[in-house]
Image (cartoon, rainbow, N blue to C red; front, side, top):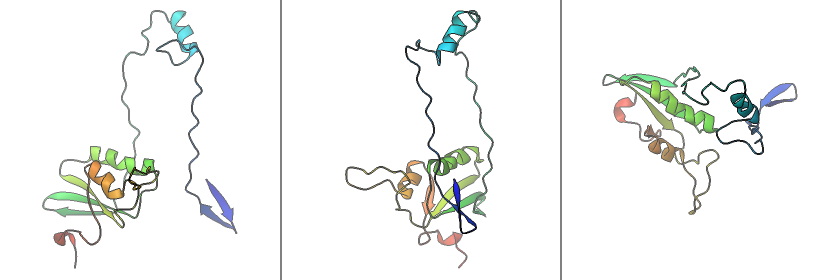
Length: 154
């Protein structure tokens, strides 16, 4: 979504909410629609219903912020001020799945204890932080004050 402000385009970071598919009433168990059910009971009687599973993926590209080979390992360093939404932070789990064994995706957070987007308040009033997300998902992370000395160019 964007809007024009004094001849310039101002970016607004809001996505349209997903429109949920309406549920049909009295839908037979195991069918996605009455039409699917009627087809299976008439012209597609001999066909197997909801059999098989096809895995697929949508190809994407990821451009890491920084890269350095350290001790024969490629370190991809992602400098993050903050995550903006679920789609952004969930992609890093997928990126990691495709990395070879000699590569690692590491986060460098500007504020690791900032709350995650859409994080719900816990009973103690806190929200899940970027650091907690990284640890839960088994990513190494640093902030600018605790980057390993041998990674620095000082």
